[in-house]
Image (cartoon, rainbow, N blue to C red; front, side, top):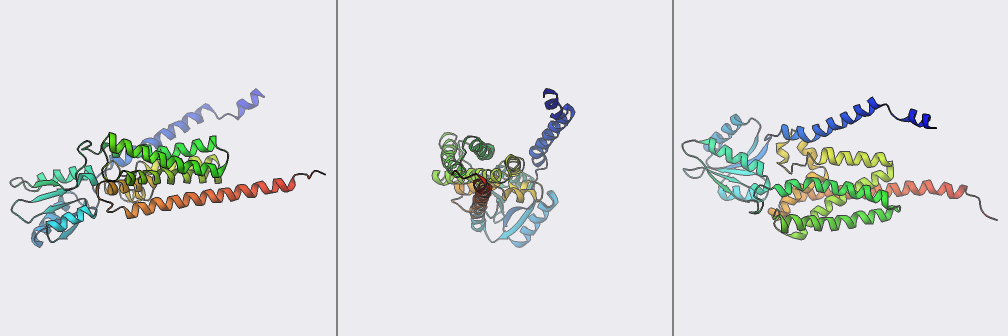
Length: 329
């Protein structure tokens, strides 16, 4: 028996190669987006006379080809509205002799820093004035709390699904547990980030609601996949959320700073949608939150559908056993 068990074990070389491959995939998943981070069609508005706007657009294209998607607006007030509505990350105002660069560090501190650096390069003899229209909180001026919160959001959903799968036998009770944990987890994480670290502003319940939606979307999807496909489904879903959703969320920079196409993909996954929705709800009075909330809602529905399909499959598997069981006389 011992010899047979030994033969069934994979060779040591195969185990080493598998672990090396997993380690390489982890490095690529987390390091590649960061290493290739640069502006790609970042929405930017320019206010001023048409010739001056054209000149600035040409300079931006020369400095960073394809880096900015420039839109002309009539005046500074229109530029501010674009930023506050989350239609642009910043603006360049050319209405006076001294140009002004408007930023919104709450919308993306990396993009805000980039615009600040560009303002110094625009005209060395007449440096631009920089104004942060929507700043980050004073207690967290770099936005570190929100950026660091991406991993707990993903892990919360994965851990919940894994723990409930192992500890709770009933499928419906697992679903109830996932939703309950999402609510308590959202309230707890929002309290820490808003009242202790000072990383959030706005409505506490609104911020907690977005976090809860994200955790529930991930955990219910993983529970449904495990119900349908077993451990392989749970592992596959967890890998997608951790290796794609987390590094492509754009929470540490901005979706437009990620490699072309991958930033868009990240916004279609729960972590990226949650990050964008949190910025909108916390700092922009909900502006721009519509699309990410729709994405989170779709994942919630998808998770519920997976769970229902899993329950139906389990029911069909149980019925033949009851029909085949002998009837006592």
